Length: 444
Image (cartoon, rainbow, N blue to C red; front, side, top):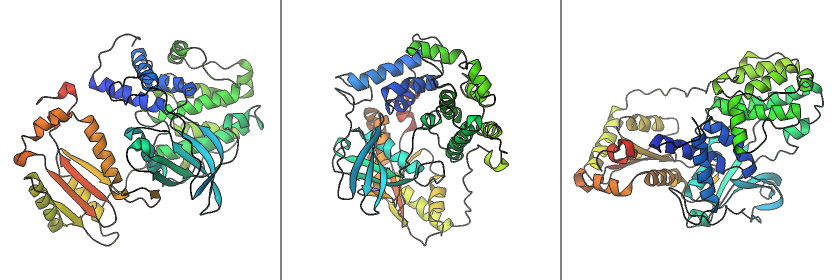
């Protein structure tokens, strides 16, 4: 598509928001490649995203769905607290600032990432980032420790940060400059990087975030590999030149680089292919890197498919399901209905609630749990409140008020169920025709 006008359909607006969310978390100098990658050659989409970023950072009047901002988000200043003593500032990105801090409780230094002042959506993304990675352990991934939200009131008044493993060293490309160890040395370093990325993909996670694919992550690896081999970035120039160059073909490597890295140079070019479907996947990347390093490629490392969730065994429980169904019926009739599911650990409380919720056609399910490594007020309900806030922000309130008034009892049904393990689930049913995107909305 050329960089012209495109109608703003609900699906297109969703794409704009996905690219915006990924780009706004980066330093301005690092945004262009990510925006180019996510827009996939759609110049009009790219222009819309850039306009949204400009409005977000410098406009004095808020745009659609954005809080007004007179200036870019300031860098948070974290001077430490009773537990953490700041030792030095390590770096910053569009989403937060990272410090080296002494944890007085453990006596060890940790990396501490502080969220920039943000609205509620930014806080939710910050917590989501932590929770997605907190239980993931891999030798080539930084291990996350604890999440903290301090302060009361609105998101702007809260101070949010999490701690993680402190890794001492230099940036990968900088450490490989001059190719110490030759092609084999570079391949071994990138094999470790590829293992970490593959570990994320096997858990159904992406390094770049929502709305992209595994191929997008491998494009980022290709950019780093290209720079490590050639000591320069694959593309340079202004925004339009970058977009056109990336859409045209993979960047060319010099004859000297091809001679020095006969195995890795073609891999770098393949990872930077304009068409994501033409880029090698994790298994192919591992094989090439092992070939360049002079190692065999174990079959156990090759699969890239996300790990399948274990199948829950569910037998009987008809009386318990009946009690939940009765509670839902009372809620549908307009009565407040709360059910507490009790039982010893491993008895199947979660499986029971999931089976019941799977029966609720059109219900909005909000859930939360007490995470051991989080210091948040009312943390059992934190996920419920976040989910409700996101739903309310997306739903047209005036339309919903009209639609909900048509429900028996004067409002939509509400149901809540809580398990003693700390998992809380709330379900609410709303009119799908009213809360649908504008193109599909019928009742308002």
